[in-house]
Length: 403
Image (cartoon, rainbow, N blue to C red; front, side, top):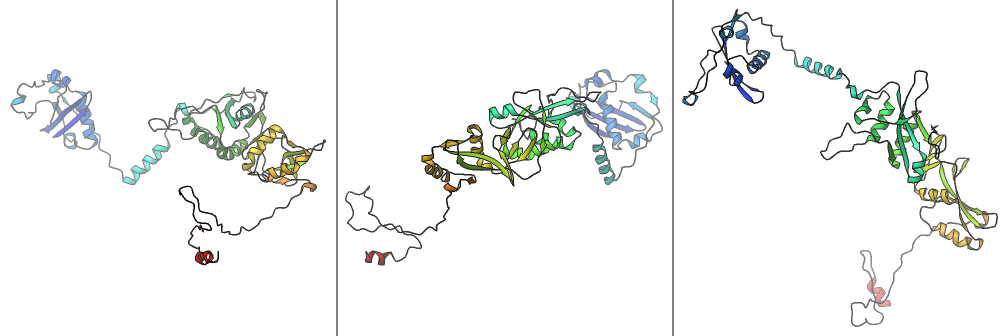
């Protein structure tokens, strides 16, 4: 005896009884009740029961008869329920049933092993494939960087033709779901960091969102991404006013460039403050790089690290103005203002303007003054002692007595 509930357009009750070689079935769906024909609901029940070995007794019968002549229990409220009557050709046909022997249950470790192997052999979704002839390009757009004041990266792609040449670069059209399907690991790393972890209103990551064609790299991210992009051999500089040109960039493995200030004299004798880059014995003009971003220095063919990010305001200002000039008569005030400024980079001055830095040890002082009269009608008596009491303040009484 077997009872089941089958979910179709709605939930139906199915019953199976086996007695004396006859498997009697019942379903309360309209197809069975009105037509008296075996329905898909009891067939689904038979398949589910057979998978669990619940029909082993009926399956062992030499001949199996399918019928609807078992008596269903009912009370007085069921007297008007119509009873299905099968057609004779269906109800009394004796059809030999071939039973497939049930396979023995595999050990638990074997089932777990099969799940692991099966999960690793799933076919790749067609929409996530990436053409083998296509390559990703990382382009530093110089015009956008200079106009917007940041490091901007454009993502583009191009294909290799049959003759070995390449097509014209075009904006990269890639979804998040395609990143992990790229053949090169370095592209997966770079694009995954560029894609970020943006979530939406419902708190999920949209795998079908396209990557942005133009992205601004913050300093913390550019220090990690730019070396990776340059080392792929597919990082280019698009010069200003040359939209069709792409200059390949190489990574400079040398020491980081440092920024310094130099105070000198112009041809007419005025004081001039200029900036420069240096590392070891090498020296570079401040205007030589095409782009200077916090932590990075770009020429037309190389990318190098740049130290002293705190001096970026000085670098940016002097690259625009070239130098700061003061009259010779105001050179002392000019030098004093420089030395008192915050975040001053290393400064080089001529011999006649050399200065010496002295560090003095602060000495404690006790200040005695008249008590404030702001909230009093009458001033205190002359010679009053005002002392801010501290935990280590001792001998105040004796000092007051001597005064």
